Every structure is written in structure tokens, then in C-alpha cells.
Length: 123
Image 1 (cartoon, one colour):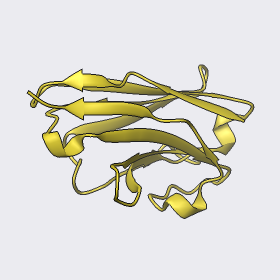
Image 2: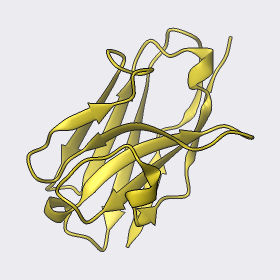
Image 3: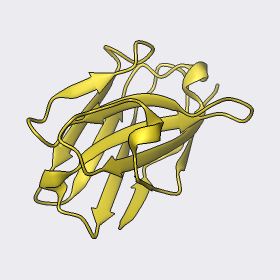
Image 4: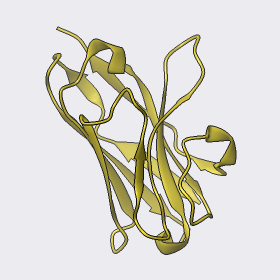
């Protein structure tokens, strides 16, 4: 199983970025995909996830209304559209996968992880 994130970078406050997670070695229909982020010295935080069972989504309170997760089973990709970015969104963003129909923002349930992509929000 391989997960590869892309789309990170430097953006000004109020700007947007779109992250993408490309998966190989799994059948997307069977896996829930989550996005997490981590800053140095802090625990990894669940940002959003999309359930394999029905495509339902979950978001951390800190990103609700600003971030949108979406999946493309045909391409085996899950994107995270991030709008109205704030300096506190700065982190390394990771995508993760678990063979479960239920979504979760608990990092402990995920089995596979990407290497991460840096997002920096700064003027």
C-alpha cells in the first residue's frame, strides 16, 4: 500500500490550497481515507475523513466550513480543498487509510500513512 500526498506549499492568509492523496495497492471502495496534520511538538490532529461505506465526511471543528474533502474512486484519489487558510493551519499534512467502512478522526485506527506534505500559511 502506498499513499502519496501532493499540493502543499506556501500561501498567504485567506488563500487556498488543494491537497491530493493518491493511493495504490488498495481498493478504494473498501477503505476510509483521512487527512491529519502535525506541527512540531504537538500531537497529530485529525482534520477530515471520508467514509468508504457511503461517502460521508467528518471534519475537525477547527476546519469546518473552510475545508472540503472529496474522493474519486475511479482515480483512487482523495482531495482536501482548503480555503480561508489561517496561520494556525500551518503543518505537515498526512493522508492515511484504514480498511473500514466507518470514518474516524482518530489516528490510532489508521493502518497506512503517506509521507506528508508541508503547508505553510504566512504573509
